[in-house]
Image (cartoon, rainbow, N blue to C red; front, side, top):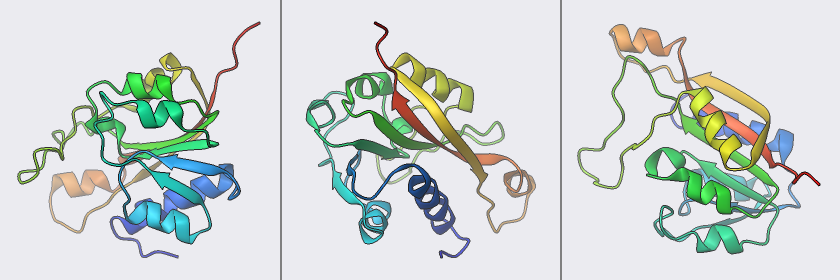
Length: 177
């Protein structure tokens, strides 16, 4: 399907996970501007609309007004200062989201050339689960996978068996009556 390279391995895991939980007749709001993964989603038959590049920490309009079935957010929440806000505002009943996990042997990612491309949060899985729970989501399925790199050294060896990515399918908790 896709070669075992970055980001192809991540895309293959993400699409397989989506196909397990989301039917292609459901409309999706993908948080983030159009990107190679949202293009693959469309090529696979999903009905996808992307956000326009607005600051998702302060502009919650798109997420709160979307009338579709599913929100996806792939490697987005680690860039936000307050991801609880947008997670709480999503009006759909289904969420598929992935994050890079915090690695104890590697510092948080920060681009040297792009001031917006940095990770404010790098979550452990339990922290992300808690964030979703606090925002009103119930996790129904989850998956982790590694991200080996073709380099020599201690960190590349650790990447062979330390999960780097975490994907979750969650549904909005039903209000208690």
